[in-house]
Image (cartoon, rainbow, N blue to C red; front, side):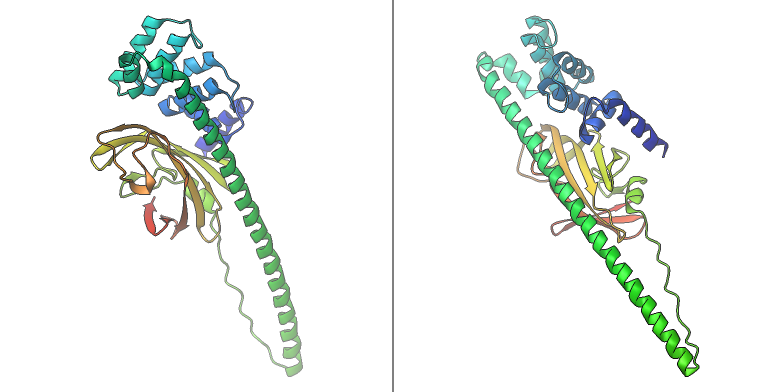
Amino acid sequence: MKILVLFAGLLISISAVADTSQLKLDLILAKRGDVSAQFSVATAYEFGGDLKKDLKQSFDWYMKAANQSHAPSQYKIGYFYENGYGVAKNKDTAMSWYKKAKANGSNQAKKRLNNKDYEKNEKAAKDKRLALQAKLEKDDVARKAKIAAENKKLAKKQRAAAKKQAQLAANKKAQKSAAKKKATANKTVVARKKPAVVKIPNMMKLVLNNKWKNKHGAADFLPSSTTTCLESADNELTCFSSEKTRKLNGAKVSYTAKSTIVGFKSSGSFKVIYNFNATGVTGIKSKTIGPYGLKMIEGWQEPAIAVKCQANDRKNITCYRGNKKVKFRR
């Protein structure tokens, strides 16, 4: 509960800057030193959108991540120095940062240092990045609309269930009255059983207040020792994992994951929608797909993956992706 209170205070302090729950979470994690979140915040300031475009702020956040040996951020610092974005133009300093990024595995920095014609491709690369950003924003809007529709559908079902429950209660009352009249007429006392009391668990709190893991380690898209979640709306959790590394067919993929958990029901079921952001791939790339859908493709991997989960009891959860299932325990 103390962690939730802390998150709530931090969210209030940045609510005037960003509207989306994901950006709020990025800002929180960035201030705590999370390098992937710092890179995300820097990108938001560079291109604008949920945040007002501010190249100086973008440069500062890229620098924080670059000082933690984050190759994409080191490349960006070189790019900003070369073009004078948010800082005085300095070609020598730019080349120095490109070398650092190359040493840490940046293919962009390697091309920039080795290819004299790289400048000609820079506009095309920028247009591609802007198009990708626009696609991600469009997909995010569609995802939120889908979640809103699902929540509306769920609320409708809940109202129908409440109406049905009220009707059942009315029928039961009528039956009880009829039985009482019959018992009085026949001079017979009819013993009636009291309905069993069923305790309905709060599934959202059960999921949020535990750290889940499976045979592969800490969960990527459920609250765990490597994944932070918070309540982003009624009956909704938003989660963001720290950077992790997984082996896929001899290669290594560094990645983070973000997820939205919705549709908690008293029966123990809920839904998870998640994306992977591959920050780096080392080794021979292939079409191998890892557990839960991780691919050897750098950047945010689309489309988002949706899984249905069911709590077997208070300590075990099983999630289904098609005909595949993954078991988690706390």
